[in-house]
Structures are given as C-alpha cells and as structure tokens.
Length: 482
Image (cartoon, rainbow, N blue to C red):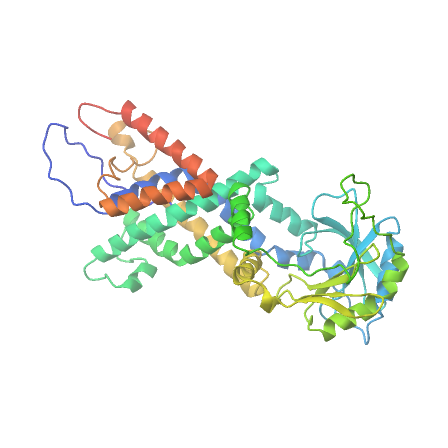
C-alpha cells in the first residue's frame, strides 16, 4: 500500500497545555506510511508496472517465438544424437555445452553452445525439430529458464531498467520498503474499519465502503485493495530481494552459514581427478588439466545417457550438460519450466551408461526447496498461465493502490489556505514518543537489525530521518505547528 489518510496538523500554541494523549501505534504507523509511501512509492510503482509485464512475458515469448519453439507433432522422434549432430552443424565454430530435449510433443530440442561474444548467463541455442532432426533456427537464450531475447529484455527492464548494476538499486529499495509501507498501512486500515461501529467485522477489511463519497470513498478502495494485494506484495518482495545487490549478498551468506544453499550433483567420475581449467597458475601439485574428449564421441553417448537418467527417476523435462574433459560425467537436471516443481538430477558415465551420482529433489534442504519454489513463482513459471495471471492481477492492483494514495494526498493539499502548491501536510511529529514503550523499543531494534541486513533500506531510513529533523528545525514556529 502507499499513502493513506493523514492527521490534521497541530495548530495549538506551545504554551497552551494539552491533555497527554493515549499511547498507540497509530501515529507511528501513520507517519511511516505517509513518508515511505510518498517518497518510495514511485520506485514500487515502477517495479509493479514492469513486474506486470514480466509476469506475462513467458506467454508473450510463446506467441512471438512460435516458429522457434513449436513444430508439427510427428509420429516418432529422431535419435537425440542425430538431432544434436545437425544442430552442431549449424554452429561448428562454437563449443557444445548442453542439450535440452524437447519437453513436450510439438516442442523443439535445444542444442546449446558457449559463445564468447555473449554476456553473462547467455548461451547460443540451435532449435531442432525432434521429429525430422532438422534445425529450425538459432537464438540467444538467457538463464536457467532459457529465456529468449524478448523475455530477457523484459526481465532486465524489471530488474535494473537497463541501467546495469546501478539500476538494480531501485528494485532493492522498492522491495525493502514494502515491508514498512504495507504493515503500517494495514494497521491504519484495521483501525479505520474497527471505527465503523456498524461495519467492524474482519470481512470489511476486504471490501470498500460504498456508502462513502469523495476522498473517503477513495480511501476505502485504497485500503481494501491494499489488503487484497498485501500477501502477494510481500511474497514478491521477499523472493525478489534474493536477486538484489546488497541484501541478496547477505541472504546468500546467511544461507551458506545455515547450510541452506542449493545442492548440486557431482559430475566427477569415481576415481577421476577433478577437472581444472587450463591456463591457470594455481593448480595443486600433482594435478594436470584433464584431456579433452572428441565432441563427436560425446554426441553418440547422449541417447544412452538420457535413457539412464529417465530410468533413474529424472522424468520431467531436463537439460543434459555435456562434459568436455575426460573423467567427467554427463549431468542431467530437470529444467525450470512451467509445471515443473522438482529439480531431480543425476550424473551418468557416458561410456558405460551407469549412473554415478544422484540428487533427488526430496533430499534438498527445506529452505533450498522454498527458495527454488519462490523463484519459480516470482518468474511466473510455477503454475503456468494461472501463475502469470495471478501476478498480473496483483501488480495491476498494487499500481492502483499507489495511484489512489497519491490522488488522496493531492486532494488533501491546503493550497487555497496556505498557498502551498503541493499535496497534503504530513502527520504531526513525535509519533515515536506516542508509541507504547515496548513497541517503540521493538520498532527501533527492528530498524537497526533490518537496516544492517538490508543496507539500502538502512541508509535510506537514515536519510529520511535526517531530512525530517532538518525540516522540523526549519519549520519550527512560535505557533508550534509541524
């Protein structure tokens, strides 16, 4: 949620005694919601709009790249080795690194190459008709989901606005402040609903009040819509922060310390030395770079490798990593595509067709599973089209909540009375002092802890506090107004 209702300014003189107000959480929630919503909501709005586009990008990709992704269903598929040989013939200048057999009838097989001209996490893919073994085209693919250029462009727009690493700060700022804006707004909305004597049931949190008019009607829509999108906003914030620059690094470190990292199957054959990259000066004594293996030999082993993996439980659509050195096994891991909820993996000796290592998804640490599911959900891949529509509706709802908040702020502006050109006055100062002591202490402690773990949130919070103090000193007047 974004900006919500604000309290009228305190215009009583300092020398006039006023009753000691009852300590509640409402003033602190109001001030946090107002300031954070006012200044951070533009970043959240950008993330919501680009996120809505990102949510439906898999469907857009399927429509725009149909010629690469889909072929008429044939009677039988050609041997995988034949498909790959024909794919390699399209790009003989590149190194074969992986193969993704057609996941469902009518899909194409992807023959994947390392291309030194491409960027990080990018590979060249030749798409092959699995029934005729004829290539149908080639294109750059990105990441573990194999996104094509359109989906990649939308993904990078959502991630950093095509500004590179500096652009990633906007999304991290939006994701971290959502955890302040949303709970504070919920506190205010619950208080307002409870104040409606005839309509104070919990169900009214989810419904706007049609009896209200004007700005109050907008406020009830703001609060009700915000309550609906609250769970999705927090889930997307939490999963999105795993990709962030500073908070993401701390999350990775925490997962490593707690053994929550994503496990991997071993690709080293029993009795073989681990492979080392050539050209380095830091190889341990006694270790030599493993000799290369003829790629044609690896290609002939692919059908047996896939059959062994299928027999060992890797039954979902998978990607086969092709080893380039002796002593290394093929690794077969289930792909991150719509409708795939596991990531079983095995290592197979190409020469014998024997499984040398296995990693069932059931043996992953619980937190690693949750992280994997969260990423898939965030990308719109977990439940296919249903997942994408849910994300799209949620982001449209969040955008509406933010725009309603700014409209309410603008309509509250005291321009006629004071000549101010901008929107509504901020809530009165002293919110923390009016908060119950245990809650105030907890809020300060939480701010310090979260500010340390999420540095961008901590720095921006300090910036807000500094500006607020300066404005308070500058605007101090004998009448004691804000």
